[in-house]
Length: 257
Picture 1 (spheres, rainbow, N blue to C red):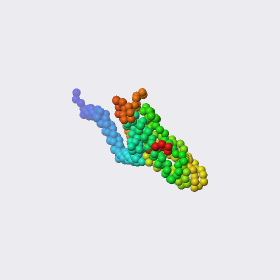
Picture 2: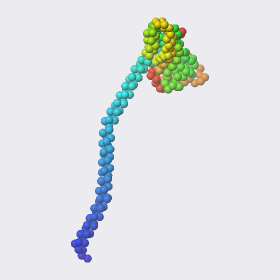
Picture 3: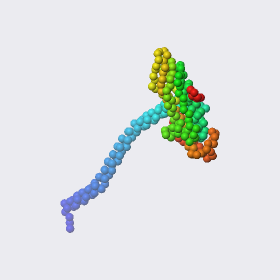
């Protein structure tokens, strides 16, 4: 059968429409959607890339703040904490517990001497001075009782020394009380000052507390209950060495030391 030109044209147009429709729905539209997705992804990457300089600036600022605070804290450590070792006026908690019972008493005397020196700042006359308490002789409890570890997450000695009474002029007593804030190697707080008498002969009474943050990051492990002491120079065989511990920062009475 011979097809007319019109029929041929209609068949050609129909086939072309089929091919075009197939190409649009099977190739062009999916490819266009994928291209749109890639474009959106590229936009998101550009957005994140634009954030990077600001993020780096924030990181640099945060790092600087941390370093500044660390530097300030190291200044506090240098000025307001005891040195390591009783010979230096401080204490070393890395020694075995039997040695620590002896060293803690020596340390107590170091603290008392430091307080005695501070008591005379300002030119006052000391009427009633504080006495630093003695540590326990027990190797099982000296660290826990005197240095409050691990009850507090880092070793710290806290001395609530009660009432101090001094005599002098108003300026002498005022300067004396203020000077506790500058006590070397310790954080000292004098509060509740009460003055009696007639100027220039005044009597000042106040409460005194002294805190010692202990330097070091090693602490000897606890002594087992019932273990006999082997002398101040060492412990029983197999006692082990110092263990890692949180770092804090980190000397006689008016009647002793």
